[in-house]
Structure formats: structure tokens, C-alpha cells
Length: 86
Image 1 (cartoon, rainbow, N blue to C red):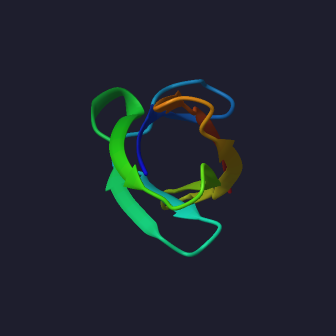
Image 2: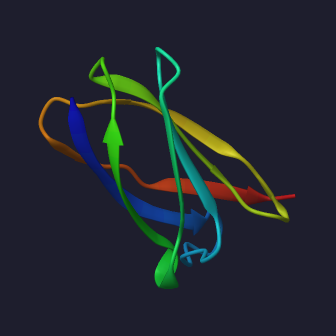
């Protein structure tokens, strides 16, 4: 199955978008897709998964990583992640 995943990665306190953050989707069966945020902290990726759920993780130097579970109840999802500065 193919899905579209997009959203923003932001600083938890300032709410500013964080460019250059790594965003990874991993399905519960181990399939993985990775991208990097652009300007304004936005990301978009096409993911392949044999199940309609998995985890989205964002990481950037100087911040604690954030991870959430995503369930695809349609062909696309918007997931925003907030990173807390270290």
C-alpha cells in the first residue's frame, strides 16, 4: 500500500519551523522511508507499508527527538511534530 505523509517539524517553544530535521516513517513490519525538512520545517514523503500504521520520528541536532504513531485512515495524513531544545 502507498500513502502520502506530510507535515511540519517545529520548535516546541517558539513554534518556528525547523529546516534540516530528519523525518523517518517506519511501519510496524519494518519498512522505512526517510526525508529532510525544507524551509519552514515542512516535509512530504510517499511511504510504502503493508499495514496502515507505523511511527513517524523527527530528529535534529540540538533537540530531543519526537515520535508519534500514525494510522492511515485514508491515502494521506498530516502529522506535525514539535521538538524540545536540549
